Amino acid sequence: MSQLSVDTAHHVITDIRAYHADGKDNQQLPDIVNRLQSRLWQQGLYWENCVADTGYSSGENYAFLENEGLQSFIPPHGTYKGGPTDFIYNEIEDNYTCPQGKVIPFTKIFSDYRTGTKKKEYRARKHVCIACPLKTRCLGKSAQEKKFSVTYYRAEYERNIKRVNSPQGRYMKGKRQSTVEPVFGTLTQFMGMRKINTIGIKQANKVMHLSAIAYNLKKYLKFEQKRSNSGLGQCAFIINIKRTFQNLFLIDVRPSKLSLS
Image 1 (cartoon, one colour):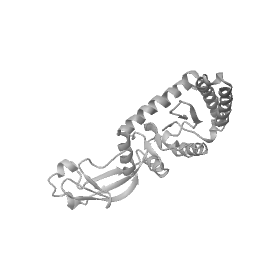
Image 2 (cartoon, rainbow, N blue to C red; image 1 turned 60 degrees about the vertical axis):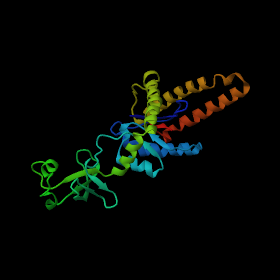
Image 3 (cartoon, rainbow, N blue to C red; image 1 turned 90 degrees about the horizontal axis):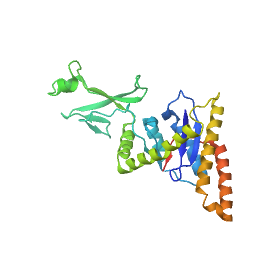
């Protein structure tokens, strides 16, 4: 499983790394962010927005990114479960109010065995629902009290969803699709990354690094073509090539498949 990070201005690969295929993308995000932040910091660059596809979505990741001072623009995964749409959430007291004005309190935190996600359970006592005129519609035929679960990181999910659905979020989505996906396609179709026939993660990383070097050299050659006619342009070109090689050979210390903004 490969992860790469691409500069949105010139589509230059800024980071690339291989991970074991048995892991999920969202499990790699903290590792990616920590190392990428270190690289950007060394170059004097400020990272504000984290843009990625749904594979990187999880409540833990949203909370982690907020703690790192980053705004996430990551579409939520299907495992996200908010509260009932017609119930009102009270954030201060951490409970829900049903359409009939009855309070459904928080009862416990648990792990959903089907999805492995952390959730919170809310349950009303039997006497609260027994005489409710909406009992049949709300509880069904067999249930005696209202009970439902909500994703533990509900607040983080809701803030992220609001950003994703905003005009800025739609812009970020287009930026990701036009930045990362074309580069990834070029690497797999023309730079030898369609299939990596090596043994071990270190050897796989070598193949990926060489592909990234070839890709970035082509970018730099095109970018510097006009300037290279002058002596100053040639000097700047040589310096840029040297820095590119230095950065790429350090790439196994920094990863990602995120477009940056």
